[in-house]
Image 1 (cartoon, rainbow, N blue to C red):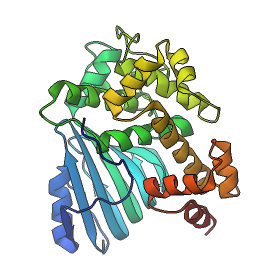
Image 2 (tube, helix red, strand yellow):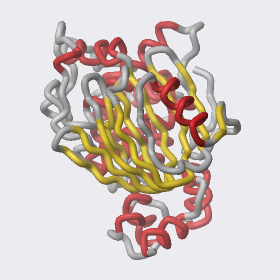
Image 3 (cartoon, helix red, strand yellow):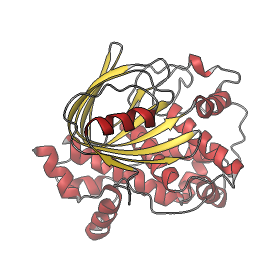
Image 4 (spheres, rainbow, N blue to C red):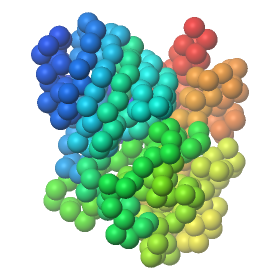
Length: 325
């Protein structure tokens, strides 16, 4: 994998920047559907990293607008970076704010909604990408029969794990010159999707795919470690403790993270914990930045603040003050 700094900030350059009907046409063409966006829209900025079966989009719209969309040709998960949004599919409505994640659309899933000052990161899955992950869990299970019983993560930690995984893969997705690594990265992201958003394929979020060897540096080892982090992110964890929980050596665990995510286990854990701190600051469960940081093991204020700003492009105090406004 190539390596670059994973961040949830804006890209260095956008593929498109415009307004009005030109922007509406760009988005319809890019996402392969008819959004029927209404409202002034303001300036629309869009950037895509296309990896075939998986694509990552960064989209910013500086105004309030509504949407009445046909189904998309891909399954789309939205990580809301700034603003607020509401999405309705059938009888289910989800209202999300910055820091949340939600499955927005997919095959046979039209939706309506509204957003204000939207900035999002979208992760798109083709049917092929989802099928490869589903078949690891239930062989020969048709992707058309995959349904979600909830469009939001089953827990705060699961949402943090999803966003941390996307952080690293979007910054270090294998190129076409490495087809096996590329396929493994797609499957890992698919498994993370299935273990984050409740569905009819994975009933138990901690369940392991069938027939997958978890005794070495495979994606199964990484998934087991990520699942353990879900439950123990607030505890004092070490590489040795994670390795014991996965039944592998510390070296195998290190290699699994390096090979499949391009980072160390501790860097991944730190990213999950930063996300959990942000959730605590945003939803009011922590009254001060120092309380939220200490809850997840950040005891050096300077290093914590620098790491937080590097990932989220804002200071932790900015997040806290916005939640009180």
